[in-house]
Amino acid sequence: MDAKRSEDLVFDSVAELFSVLSTPIRLKIISAVCQGEKNVSELLSEIDTTQPNMSQHLATLYRSGVLAKRREGTQMYYRLQSERVAMLCRAVCTQVAIELDPESEVKPSERLVPVALR
Image (cartoon, rainbow, N blue to C red; front, side, top):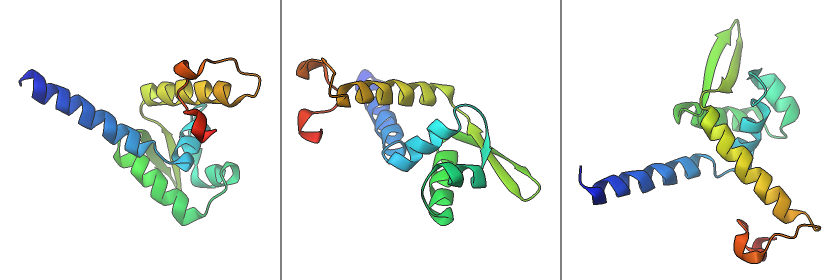
C-alpha cells in the first residue's frame, strides 16, 4: 500500500470513528458504561431519551465495535468493547469541560472548542 493510500485510510477511519461519536447521547452511553455493563433499563434511567432512540444508538455503537453486548434472559447488557475509545472520549470531554469553566485560563490558541461555540 502506498503512503497516500495509507494516509487516506487513516483519515477515513478517524472520520468514521468521529461520526459514530458525534452525538451527545452516544457519548452519554459510553460514559454510563465506563464503570461496567448496564442493561437498557439502567441506561434509560440515567439518560433522558426514549427506548426506541436508545436502542438505535446502542445498535450503532455495537455495530461500530465500541460496545459489546450479552443477553441474560430478556435483558440485553452493554459494556465497552473498546477501552481506547472510552479513553479518547474521556480526554476530549475533560478538556472541553475545562475550557467551558468560566475560571479557565486556557489560551484561545490551545482550545479544542472554538470561542464561537461557547
